[in-house]
Image (cartoon, rainbow, N blue to C red; front, side, top):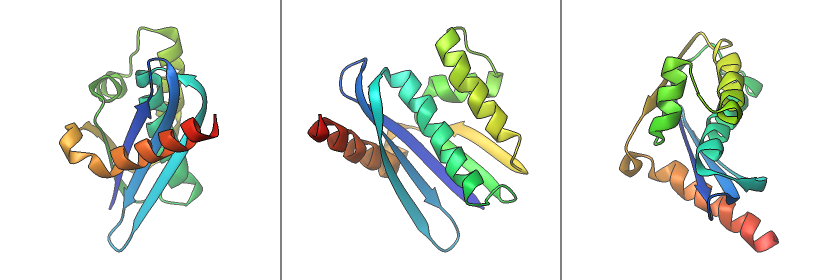
Length: 135
């Protein structure tokens, strides 16, 4: 079983952004902090975080595991659950995520409160600081 926690941090809306990904398996933890290029709004950065987390799992051959993915963005969780987004830009991110999800044997994406997503939040803030300092 894999637990995937994702989060994004944005300075301004839109503005520079970073993504945090925390992957917890039975015997290890992987922490990933990714600065994003360009300006992002918060919702799109949250979608990008889920996309990058799923992409990492696929690249590292975790598609046969049971994956429980957690986000503190209600919009992301609800859009994925309903397979719907009104905004065309958001729809692109959603479509990319849905295409990745079919590669997994079992995957669940759920909303959790921010208080339960501190690991991914800290990683996203670290990534945001990296991109701000490099500007």
